[in-house]
Image 1: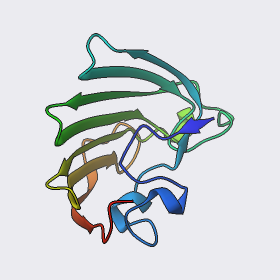
Image 2: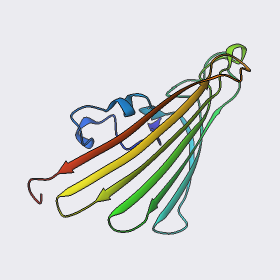
Image 3: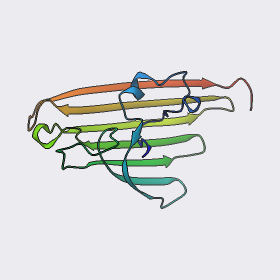
Length: 153
């Protein structure tokens, strides 16, 4: 079990910029269960590939043979801008009902001064309405969160 590779908010409240998790974060997993392979070719770039039990699943679902997959690319563009793009491809259904889910999370974390920071992000997800359907139910969430520190500590 590991923290989710998707999003900038944590299940640990003290790590979040807001008092609670945002609606954007509530529509993405808190954790993942599976394997993660990380590659860091430079100090600025980190890439990861994941094989998971599903969308926030501790155990494999009975009757589900297909694992879920994820990717993450983190890029520290400069001292003030960090970019992240994470994806999910998989299902949380048994094979008999398999509805595929495709999800993408993109955000930028910007330190715009000694005491002001900004996060801007966008999530986009789609899930099949039924097995083998070409009709999908979409959801999306834009977000901008600003933080002002009252002291240097």
